[in-house]
Image 1 (tube, rainbow over the protein chains, first blue to last red):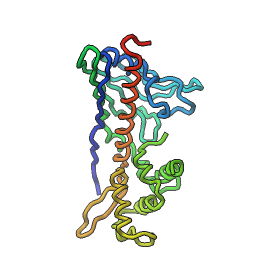
Image 2: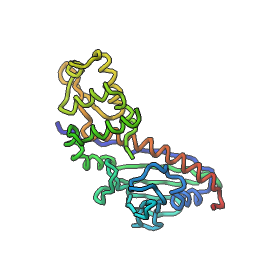
Image 3: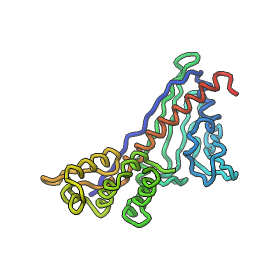
Image 4: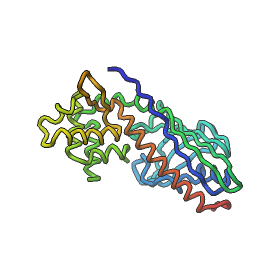
Length: 156
Length: 105
């Protein structure tokens, strides 16, 4: 059986009571201040997150140990309206330079101090291209079910 | 960090996990899954429904029976996780932006 799965992009939006410029600045420049702290891939606690303010810039975290871990890069840097980031973290939460999924942010001014922010995370099928290994390991002792079991053990 | 919280929550139930693991060796019908499990067929169906909603399994009709498979990519689970994650992240972003206000820090 051969199936091609094309998951729909994840789309989310939020209205923020600041100007378009401030919304863009806080999203990019203060990302460490709002990013859910538990969501990172480095070995030690998250110290900071950096989005370099230019096309081709790096997107990475810095751990408490000073080690920098790549998350992706800046594909489009168009202040203060648009930002496209490459999310290069696999389904196994490892950085992989050969994986590129796109996270696009649109900042639309709806008032002097109100901005509508649209987020789209797309190309999710590319995670599947990377999932061959996961698929083949589903039943293996250290395979996916084991990871799921471990997690279930933590939460139950 | 773990992904697919919905998937993990779905697997927190030991019977449901057993049902899921039985699918690892290949597609099965509800009847086949229920054999040897200490629960009724309707209970197995209910577990499959939860697993399906979490994006962990898919189903298809084969003649008169319905056969369940592990989602070959687990993409449904990953997508569900990302959807939940971005909702959380954008709310946190909104709170921080409004806390800082126009002047910044």
